[in-house]
Image (tube, rainbow, N blue to C red; front, side, top):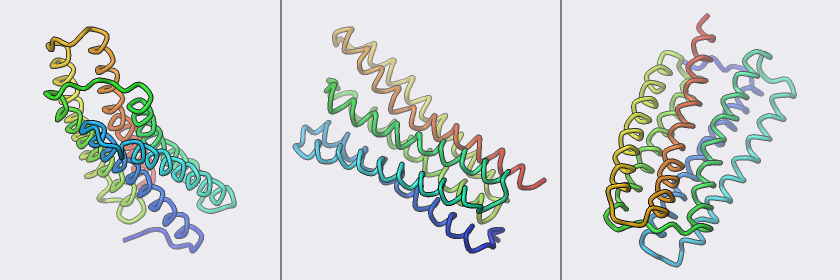
Amino acid sequence: MSWILGKKEREIVDKVLNFLDVIGNTLTNLREAIKAYLDSKDEFQELAEKVRVNEHRADDLRRQIESTMYGGAFLPNFRGDLLGIIESADKVANKAEYVADMLEFERPFIPQELRMNFLRILDLSIETYEALKLSIYYLFEDLDKVGEYVLLTEQKEHEVDVEERKTIKSIFASDIPYPQKLHLKELVRNIADIADRAEDCSDRVEVVSLKRRV
């Protein structure tokens, strides 16, 4: 059962959930953009721009939430905790935009045999974020369920780590030129960093959840 009772607080929770959905849309757009990039489709540019548009929307929503909260919603200690979670979650969208920019501006060459590896890392990173999103939702709605999704976030991030190491090993075992290997390694690590940032945020959620129980 939700512990959020005040009208102003409920409005902020709704804005936070909208903010999290926009970040999710940013990641979906990135997935579509990477797929178009790998398939050499013309709509890659348009999809990369959608990533940037949604990242900007997430920034706007974050600022709106911060402004409203500083107007007096929630007790000061929880207000600071929630702002920390929001700022940490926003870094997921920032990293998605960085990856889209890297693809558009640097145009890394991704061998055919490694393409599914990149999509797998991104898909697992998106799953990591979706677990984080649920942990934040239950932070407002049911504190007893927060731990379950914090743990799921950690598990998914570990799956990303495993796939990241496997892909980097495959990159350096290939016969592509060494500078291209370094370029691909950087791309892999930036995609995987989406999951790292989601897990960092889930650590904050776990701490706040424990504090709410005291």
